[in-house]
Length: 120
Image (cartoon, rainbow, N blue to C red; front, side):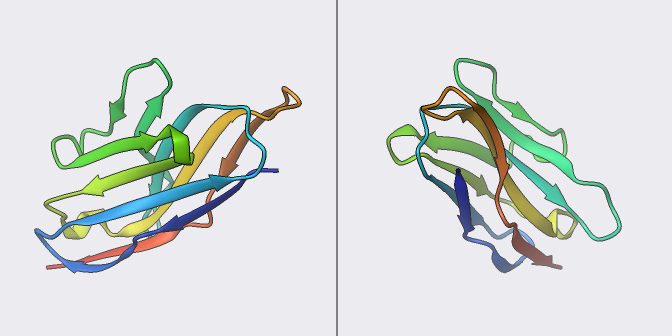
């Protein structure tokens, strides 16, 4: 079983920056995709950024040029650097990892979520 632990959320004023981290633990054979999603109050969860192995990095239009997703494969960690934050970025942010266990079973797991609050 894969466990994902997120950190780095908090409160910041508009224009500020935060970096979210998500560490995956457990027996993992490989990670095929790392992504960050967010859910604001009263809204559906949306994909913010994704980083597939050997694929094209994706950013939602609302965060392009401000957010950067990156990974440290050796540490099974994915980051989301968020700059120039806006009040509309306020949401609970979730990491999502997909890949294979040593048993070759596929997994697709979510973190517990971390709150990001941006005040104007």
